[in-house]
Each structure stands twice: as C-alpha cells, then as structure tokens.
Image (tube, rainbow, N blue to C red; front, side):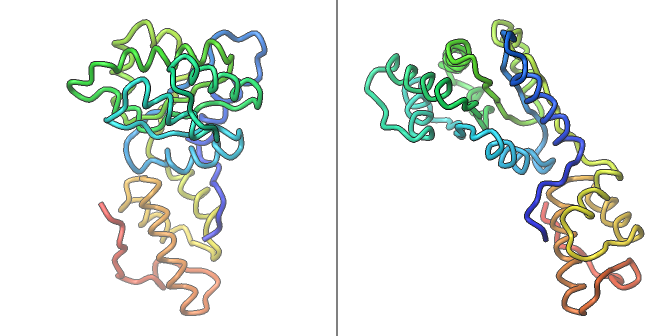
Length: 237
C-alpha cells in the first residue's frame, strides 16, 4: 500500500475549513471542530494536516486540569513548561504566533466526561489561546461532540468551521483504491468490499491491503472478485 493520503470528500472538507481559517487576514474566528465516528478517517486526516501545517498536536486526557493541559501543549510545542498557568499560556501563544503554528486538540470528548468540572474552563482557556495567538485551534472528537459543544453557547458561537466526517461513498472508495493500492482493484471486488465495510475508511484500507497482499503473492498486477474468490476479509470490528 502506498503511504499517501487519498483525497476523499472528508479530506476536501477539512482542507476547505483550514483554508477558510488561515487565508483571511481579518477573520476573527479561527476555531474548527472535526467530528465523526470511529473508523471514518479522522486520524489519517489529522496526521496529514498536522504535517502540512506544522501543527502543535496533543491528545486530551481524562486526567487533565487547566494546568496539565497547558503543560501538555507546551511540551508538544517543544518547550519546557514554566510554572504559572499564565506563563505557559504565553509560551503557547508566542510559539503559535512566532512560528505560524495552529493547535490541534484530539480526543476532545475527554473534556466532557461525567463529573468533569473544569471542562468549560479548559475550553475557555483554548479560546483564550485562539484569541491571543490569532491562529487556528482545531478540536477533534467523536460523532456526538458537536451536540455537546452546541450546549456551550459561549464556545459554540466562536467555532467558525464545523466539519462532520462521514462514511465513504462508492466514489470515495474508488479514490482510496486508486490512491493507495499498488495493484489494480477491479470494480466488482471493490463493490463487494464497499458493501461489507459499509463505507468505513479504516476497514476499506484493511480490505484493500489484504487483497493487495494476496495478489502480490500470486504475482498478479490486478485482482477482481473471481480471483479473490470466497475468501473472507479480516476487517476487525
């Protein structure tokens, strides 16, 4: 399989959102929310855009306080955290402004766990970093995180781009096969794989990799449903 990112519609929507918050010099709101179920390609997209924009990337933790969140971001930016929260915020803002780096916060759902009393304050701290740095803050969570954030009106109204990641359609599946596979995947086999995976990006990648390995073991440069036969894919959950 080729180590590339297939230009599916989810990637295009993410790209459009990033363009919107990075190319308008006078734009006030530069916060982005990416949301979607497990397996729809959020992790692949994050890795691609993190490298493209040299983003500061952190995964939220259920053990976070405001202080530990700021320390995690400072460390991800490549600096030693100072002691006071205000000083760490300044470290983050200076890095984002000075180097033109957006901030990506993954696993945002951890800020909304039952009993998480500081979630609103942590969101407000992220918003403060956004305002002071004038750089994008991209938050990433599961498929219900958009509803939870919309209940936090003071934060929700500051999010400029809401990007929902969805299962792939048949056209996307062909794009993935053409982009990633090193052998030709015929339509009838792709149709079967698309049906069995229900359009889940992660499962389609697994199925394509298995078909490619099988074809290479036979020294074929293409594979169709007849050649695949009645073999079962190991697609996980």
